[in-house]
Amino acid sequence: MSDQGTRQGGGVRAILTRRSLLKGTAMAAGALAAGPLLQACGPAAGPQASSGPLKLGVLVPLSGVYSGLGQDMVQGMQLYLDSINNEIAGRKVQIIQEDSEAKTDVAPTKARKLLDQDKVDLVTGIVHSGVALALRDLFDSTKNILIISNAGADDVTGAKKSKYIFRTSFSNSQTTYPAGPWVFNNIGKKAALSAPDYAAGKEMMNGFKRTFTEAGGEVVFEVYPPLGNNDYQPFLTQLQQANPEVIFSFYSGSDAVRFVQQYEQFGLKGKIPLAGAGFMTESDVLPQQGAAAEGIRTSLHYTYLLDTPENKKFVEAYQAKFNELPSVFALQAYDATQLIDAAIKTTQGNTSDKDKLVEALVNASITSPRGPFKIDPDTHNPIMHIYMREVQKVGDDMGNVVIADLGEAKGPS
Ligand code: BEZ
Image (cartoon, helix red, strand yellow):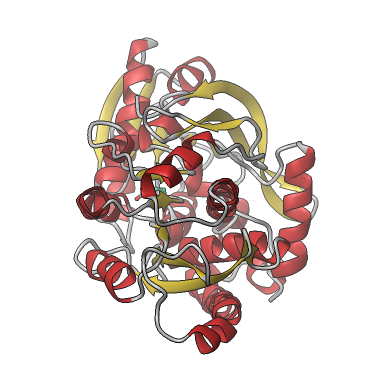
């Protein structure tokens, strides 16, 4: 499972191949945790369980543009569960994994299956903001607990916050609003924006736009290609024609690989600086982007290069287990699993009293590899630092080197 072959410049096809291999590994790891328990315990123990297996429903995309993110999240969970021998408060952990396909019309059916048929104790995962929004009412009205470990839809911990929904990831605007003044002061005063045409893209651009224009900057052009796009050339043409001093973007998964590669192929690298939300150059895509990504500056709450003792331990353990560097997606799922562990220990294994479990989740304290981290008791969204990072060569790898600490950020803004 070495990255070496794909790091040498394999392109999108190579990352999908490598990711498919990882998918097999990650799912096998999940099945390993679940397999013997499924045999031993037979049918679901029911939602009132406080003994017997602890059933964690994991809803992530394992196909499509965000499949690599889903795979990293499964690996992050697996790493933490291995470290606690797959047991929380005396209950063996059973993972029940479903492919959300990152589709708003597929995920609710899969979530209902996890709740009604599998009778999971709680659900975690969720990559796509639209999926998080589509699931919000289901979890709120049935008082089932959802721990989101990626999807950043602002409303889920903002205007439509729910007592039963928590996030260990971020809200979309939280990742970019701290970058506005920094980009204005350090890169350029006229920006063109580009992101996929759905809630996450719009909210990340709006977060940046607000503070960039407050600082005195001007947004001269915006373009929103469809999610899961192959050809960015028409959009790059429009971005160039707008004559900005900086392009600020959000892309993730296979979109990020293609956008960054085509930005170089189209000749914009070296002419117009590229900045954006850090997902665009995270460790899941950086090996494929290679030198095309060098110099891109992005804002995010994590990089595997963060210099904390907890992060060093996390990165070493992740590399030893999966032979690759952890991404923010693996980190967020690792922390979701830590949070679940801490809360369920507090309730001594009892997951049937949802209000008690909510209280335990609000009060749980975990040490995140990302550094300072707490759950906002009002919104259930993390309060954490956002860093400005720059892609640089680090040994044989490309890495996101911290170039500024933008301070503590709450979300949504
Ligand atoms: C989202 O849809 O919320 C999202 C997807 C990928 C990366 C970051 C956010």
